[in-house]
Amino acid sequence: MGDSKFVFLGYLLVCSVLQLVWSHGDHPLSKVSIHRASLSLLDLAHIKVSPPILGLQGQTAEWVTLEYSSPIPSIDDWIGVFSPSNFSASACPAENRRVYPPLLCSAPIKYQYANYSNPQYSATGKGILKLQLINQRSDFSFAMFSGGLSNPKVVAISNKISFANPNAPVYPRLAMGKLWNEMTVTWTSGYGINEADPLVQWGPKGGDHIHSPAGTLTFTKDSLCGAPARTVGWRDPGFIHTSYLKELWPNRIYEYKIGHRLNNGTYIWSQNYQFRAAPFPGQKSLQRVAIFGDMGKDEVDGSNEYNNFQRGSLNTTQQLIQDLENIDMVFHIGDISYANGYLSQWDQFTAQVEPIASAVPYMIASGSHERDWPGTGSFYENMDSGGECGVLAQIMFYVPASNRAKFWYPIDYGMFRFRIADTEHDWREGTEQYKFIEHCLASVDRQKQPWLIFLAHRVLGYSSCICYAEEGSFAEPMGRESLQKLWQKYKVDIAIYGHVHNYERTCPIYQNICTSEEKHHYKGTLNGTIHIVAGGAGASLSTFTSLKTKWSIFKDYDHGFVKLTAFDHSNLLFEYKKSRDGKVYDSFKISRDYRDILACTVDSCPRTTLAS
Ligand SMILES: *[C@@H]1O[C@H](CO)[C@@H](O)[C@H](O)[C@H]1NC(C)=O
Ligand SMILES: *[C@@H]1O[C@H](CO)[C@@H](O)[C@H](O)[C@H]1NC(C)=O
Ligand SMILES: *[C@@H]1O[C@H](CO)[C@@H](O)[C@H](O)[C@H]1NC(C)=O
Ligand SMILES: *[C@@H]1O[C@H](CO)[C@@H](O)[C@H](O)[C@H]1NC(C)=O
Ligand SMILES: *[C@@H]1O[C@H](CO)[C@@H](O)[C@H](O)[C@H]1NC(C)=O
Image (cartoon, rainbow, N blue to C red):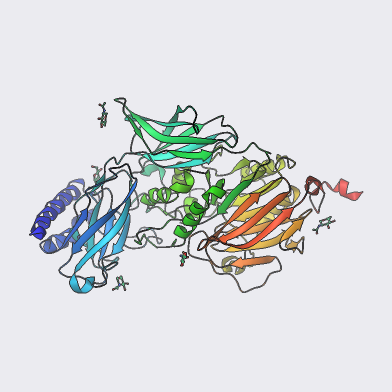
């Protein structure tokens, strides 16, 4: 009985989907066999989802239950999650060799095998599945497919469900502004500039709150560079808003919420959040920063995305959230979401990191998977960005760069100065970026900001990744050749990279020679820079070469992240933690006085002074 009702409902839905597909005629392939196949099976296959309305209490994520059955179950049947619900279920050719199945003209947000929580499915043809959905500005439908991933055929389409307010402001992410006492808040919504004014209500905890306006950005397919971002991976990005909270008092706790004032005067608000304002540059206080690269995202309900490449990212996210009281800022140094041109994944990523990014500044660097695309001015001419060519990273996250398309910038945070480089643009001597690096390193007052840290996505220093060892370079070619003079001259303490998905630490080193025999407690002058690979935050791990080098002190083939703790101007602690348990597996300390930084070492002072 219930079944016949669903069949009828399903029939209407498929008809309406068909009608939309016919009338829009989006793609030549969207008109043929797939829908004929689904129609022929209608009487016997069904899929139903509940509840019909999500987020009634303002939640931005909720679990739904799917019930389904098929008269011809097969082990490779799968269920795709689609948003908006009126997807086009036709198969499309792969335009890009990095695009994996399922190749549908509207890419599903995610998918799961019909047998996932129902091992008997291929015998009984019945199943129940629980999935988590996040609010991403559109309604949802679910489609059951036969034919596996590579030859998908729709056999049933579910009822549509939606969040109560799909336009709601969601996933706030903080970032340091251009000044040390400025915090920016960026979020996503479905409200354009003609529908509502975006704003932040904020103020010191327990004090008076004010409203600050926000700016709004969005983009169209024309801003993207290729497939799948411009084709099957395209999804309406909604609107991305940024507000600048200025003249903050150092270290004070602020409360805020993000919202929109509709044209009729009604306010739509998010939940309440809070953050601690940055310390004054040079200020002595406890300052703790977590750093990692290549995290990506994964689904808590176990469902799949295109290549399931970032299974480690949930553990890392979980450890950071658990330790959030002891973290003041986060750097995610490139390979942010691995959306690779499937735009929906940026919503999923910002939802996954929301507990972190809404509470501490979440600073990003540009990676190959954000920027690289042939013929678009990236330093590497590969297809890692899936056609995004930097646009998504530049809009979804704020960075205090003077031009957000050129992802290099400095951050002053108490006793730290961070210099974030953009390895997807040329850094060699004579380039705009090289000048910027030199200026940034040269202009720091080391008495006040003794801890000088260089961050970049690709390994410009040293790595035992088999990928680099095979080339014989043990780093990105032209990396340290171009930059080691600057690191040495300006006495950069630590350089940290991603790109290679593991952990490695070097001795303090200059021109391939260790400048100290010590391994755990560096006292006095370092005479070189310690290079760290911290790209193991989530993506599939990278193999080390079996070659032994003098400079490699510690290697770990696992997921993890690093943490820097500055206790004062003379004491810094470095820790490497595994994502699986949050415990410290490698660490070192630097203890020194200001005069140790001033002291001349090889190539760090003008030659005339060394001569005496
Ligand atoms: C479920 O389906 C997947 C994909 O076809 C298959 O790899 C897996 O072995 C199946 N599991 C069971 C319990 O049948
Ligand atoms: C789905 O609906 C939206 C909004 O009505 C429309 O812009 C889009 O073209 C439709 N997609 C398909 C595949 O019909
Ligand atoms: C204002 O508009 C919103 C959205 O259309 C509506 O939900 C709300 O009831 C309206 N408020 C008033 C006071 O008219
Ligand atoms: C995540 O951590 C758990 C232990 O907490 C571990 O069993 C699991 O293998 C980890 N996942 C990955 C992908 O490393
Ligand atoms: C660093 O270099 C200076 C001068 O070249 C030397 O005196 C000092 O011993 C070196 N420090 C270490 C830790 O090797």
